[in-house]
Image 1: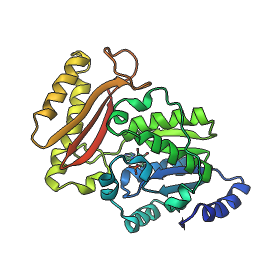
Image 2: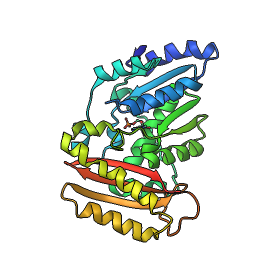
Image 3: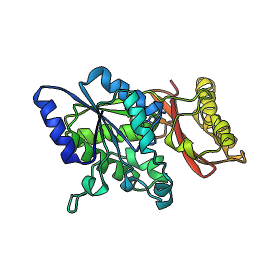
Amino acid sequence: MRVCRSFQELREFLNAEVEKGLTIGLVPTMGALHQGHLSLVQKSKQTCDITVCSIFVNPAQFNKVEDLEKYPRTEEADLVLLESGNCDVVIIPEVADVYPAGYPLVSVELNGIDVVMEGIHRPGHFAGVVQVVGRFFEAVKPQVSYFGDKDYQQLAVIKKMVLERKFPVEVIGCPTLREKSGLAMSSRNLRLSEKAIKTAALIKEQLDWAKSNFDFNSIAQIEQIVRKVFESHPDFELEYFEIASADNLLPVKTGSGKVRAFIAARIEGVRLIDNLAMN
Ligand code: AMP
């Protein structure tokens, strides 16, 4: 496995591979890797000749300094995991390499996908995501890039960005990997106590409950019941629970069309998000 510390080093390696006609798959991550990340690497390996995983904790997408500082960093273990998954190349660039002085801030029209849910609770977050993913697409020039359904709104934002900026990249959404309890795997779970990890299983339980009651209750009723469960729970602070269109992420009143439930809640101060298709 090749580990590159700069885009220049990466390009020197990849140019030779591209000349041989090999295809490149990119898996962008912020490190603290787990099996969910590795499943994206496996997906890329099934289709692409060379799989590049990027590890970069992107300052531009954190709206709270504290959240950025507390973001887990486990580079040594990440490299061991990626090696075990036969990842071909890892790129771990410096901030100055990703955002060189004078690099223009690119803004993209996202048609409102960025101003609901995460967009409300993390102002500026998607502007930072668009910035960093665009930069990695320019530097790595992948034919295909893999993202998790776990961050479904992010996936929608990236698909829209690719259309707007006309990147020649196919964006593939991949299923969420979960712990046995149903808790979505997340780098942030590393910051939770054992007790909180057990309690956090309630998130997926409630998403499952919403799904199994979807045909029998109104969307407003389901939202009200689930919100109440979290709002009356001593360990959770609910940010939002919304049932929305899977296409434009706007709230829906009826279950016609593809619909998903989305949740963000804090436990022990750690912000967890999850979502599930309702139909
Ligand atoms: P992150 O390092 O959290 O920015 O995540 C990097 C990529 O891995 C994103 O596309 C995430 O959606 C994806 N990802 C994170 N958690 C999971 C999971 N549990 N299952 C599948 N993909 C995931």
